[in-house]
Amino acid sequence: MTTAKARAAARVTYQLETLWDYDYEPTHAELETLYETAKKNQWNGSTAIDWSHRPGAAGPVLNVQVAFAGTNFFARLTPEEQKEVEIRVSAWRLSQFLHGEQGALVVCGQLVNSIPELDAKLYASTQVVDEGRHVEVFERYVKKLHKIYPVDPLLKTVLDEILATNLWELKLLGMQMIVEGLAIAAFNLMRKQTADPTLAQLLDYVLQDEGRHVNFGYFALRRSIPDMAPAKREYLEDFTFRVCDAMYARDERTGFQSIKTVWNELGWDGDAIWRDTIAHSQTTKAFNSFLFHDNLMPRLVRLGLISPRVEPRYRAIGLCV
Ligand SMILES: [Fe+2]
Ligand SMILES: [Fe+2]
Image (tube, rainbow, N blue to C red; front, top):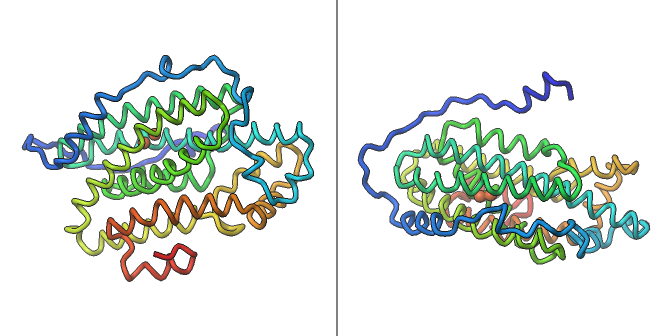
């Protein structure tokens, strides 16, 4: 990528209204407790996590034996090649979480400005600090493990759309509900599978914070969605479906395809391995179904975002309600 192109890709231009709240009246009773918990449960990434272990030395970072079980390519690899795949795929996946954390950091900065009520702004201010800490610890871990891979183009498109909208409701929906909701489910699975002590500890701390963030999004949206103008609500519904459709990896066209970079840099055929994984890895299918079907959809239903108008579209891609 040329420098000019890289600069353009790293910039998002948007117009956003900053709102003052001079009422100083509590508006969200649930946020009071959440705000207190956020202040109490701050932690320091430098000292809370034991950084002395070499990543991958104690056991698999992410369990690729499980992830690629059933595929043709993985069974043919030597043990050394399998270890190489483990390190690189783990670094690629954790890099995407790192970019997602940076996305959460910058979106939360916007929310402090644009969300109308002061108690919500105060809560959002704690999330800015949380996300800064998450960027710090993921960056440190990925650099120790291998290297930071570029942001996946699909992930970047979704994050840029959340950043560029002037609707705070869409920012909350896109970031706190969809991106962070999916990340929590993925972190929980990674936590169960990893045998790396540093990553396990890092995920335990990050998960503590992420639970609050999803609750924040849910509380604020639950209040605003019922009174929303129909056109705005349809806009939110359409955005949600479009993002789910693109990210719910179910065929060769959907999902985060930049993992092909890992295969190509090892000198293998990235497209062929991508097709092999989509067709034969039961774990990949189960993982995506767990993320979208079991975790995200129930939340969207509770928020009233799966209206009869959009429900058939979800049904068509296998995300029945
Ligand atoms: Fe985070
Ligand atoms: Fe978060």
